[in-house]
Length: 232
Ligand SMILES: [Zn+2]
Image 1 (spheres, protein in one colour):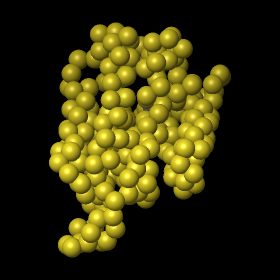
Image 2 (tube, protein in one colour):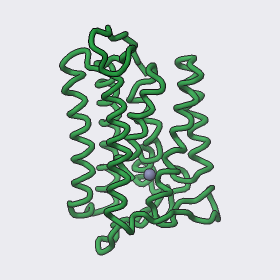
Image 3 (tube, rainbow, N blue to C red):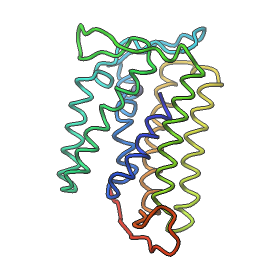
């Protein structure tokens, strides 16, 4: 699951205008943002299997991809958000989005997702074995979330207008190239590629600062947009 996580973040923005899209990206993708660093330190493990439909075997990733730890990371991130912003609703959303990653991954992964570190049973409904269905789910989640975001926000300037489409284009490009391109040459290469996800989060913060939340009905002519600066 790649685009689907971002779709959830885009959609959530429409529920809580004051939380930056960057923070929502950070929350939904926290597991995949942390994962490359733990791969580089050898704490979590993946192997590349180029001959398979899914070219990765997630050997061990209990810190980033166990349900228990994702719930705890969510608690931590939600608490951190509350301390920074004193926004209870925003903090709850941020806290829930972190384990939403596990639930979405559950749909597509083959059984490799643990409930907790250690000798946990592994879960995964294996939609990845059905590539067309997987892409359909990704497209519906991403397209649906983005549609909600575009409908409920509007650009304050050119950065907000074109920045959003640069962001969307970048996400789609990464997704398509991972589908069609050759698998990474090594786990180290994969991990460094994964670190570039942080740039997407930074870009989302910047795009979000250059867009405002509409107050009136979506697209209502003459409704002056209210400016809600969303810093974090
Ligand atoms: Zn993941």
